[in-house]
Image (cartoon, rainbow, N blue to C red; front, side):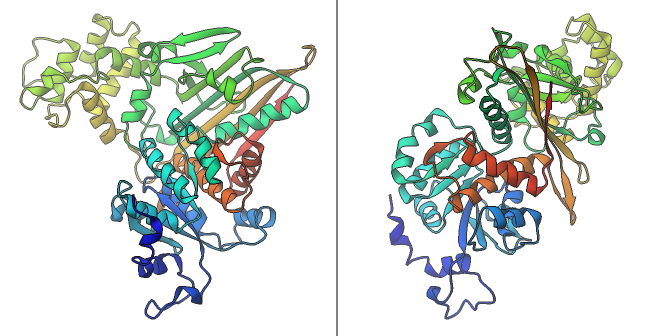
Length: 516
């Protein structure tokens, strides 16, 4: 592997342009020692969540902004403007992020090119990786070798955990799970739990709900759901098994039963929202992460959707629309969506020129036993028609499974239009009691955030609630407010106290409430 120091002379002119853009400096005849270098952050990735992080970091000179006013007054005595380098596999994607941001530069980078990766990392103080989770290990190892801090918004997996000692020995922090979920959920949970413990309260129950869903006016389709990115990951999550603890009993839900386990949910402080909750993977691990496994008889984490989502998705799964195996029907010529629907529903005798509508679909669902309730059958039929899964048009050859077909149609039909907004809702409820159980309280924390449109540019609530925490993590590392080294989650007070403060300064609507 190349020594990063050997690359510096070769790219001196390039890096001067990127890292030393202060004022109106002429590139010709410029010497790096003539001016103080800006603080630099490398952001890897160019997806939707990147823009808010870049925009915030590169706007550090705007001290009039409430966020920067709070940050400069409370967390940074001596501060330089930040130059953000956005690196993407495709230069045009990085340029789309940086085109309207003065202190941001786009570069092309394939992280498998270790020489270029090391070159860019060597020139910055902190790296933010918003790449797919599978890429983080490569970046983390480079950061350890070059002794640079790293921030990600992804779950810390076993492979990343194994880097803890190496990161500590290198004197760096790898701050993972610094997004929404995981991220802000950790921060609010630990604040509530630690405050309860300081008041000699025992946590009896911890329940957490989080979801990225359309704003009410944008939930304008039969599924009441839309995707702001490729739907494959979200759809696959519907087949993950789940485990949680309820009133002392461990409950396990198989993946095939996940949608059927959804329950109706109403939040008293948000009575206008008709929601449901789906168990989210293994909740039990958070008993250990949050230090409440020995005291809480209920530990539950769930995913929020609008009511009715799960009964439709569960029925689509029973029909076979979520099966990921290669389907023989799709390998014969160029089949039509309508014919594939007939194949899955096992409807025979329909002539090739005829159409199939909502009534026929719903009747088939009832007669086949795929739906037992007429109302559900109608909802599913409306969803199938809305997605165009009944249309006499050809299925693309890239679709080799029913899952592929469903993802293809959902990506086409369940996307946000230019002026539509998404919504993020995160809600924690913990029941606490005195050691003698004589006094009990319910403590609640809620985040409600909507997507924004400014100057003709739309930013989703999901992008804001993932990108902004990652940017704040970088700022806390730049100012040495986070002193713990190694692999870290935002469950430590040195992270979550300033981070929550800065999230509110940014404008996030975080509320807390205590009820006796």
